[in-house]
Image 1 (cartoon, rainbow, N blue to C red):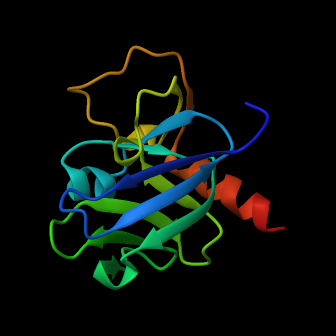
Image 2 (cartoon, helix red, strand yellow):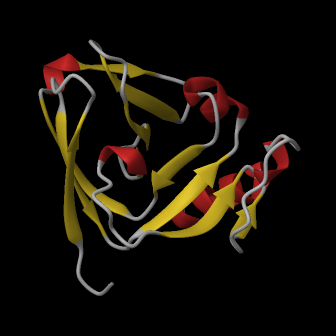
Length: 142
């Protein structure tokens, strides 16, 4: 995909709507313990996200889940809206929020070293351990 596309979605109750600018139609799975606890399984999210615009932002609760990241969710229905670095430079948005039948490409898995053995995705993906993820983000800061 050459041009960014704008995708729209909302939480379950409709209190929060979002508009997401995506550079590619790719989806990544995060297997870290925190994402699995947050959603009951791996987080399937768009990683090539540019701008995220929220309407109903006063209905969004933010949880500082680590020293470097935070998670946003609707304070009424609990829908997961985003994971973002606290610097605001990187967003991961759950693909189910904006999926209208796009031709998604499941192309990467992160924190693969934390993935439980009881499930497995059959796609060929780029797999990164937690350490490799942190190293990649640190390299991008230099």
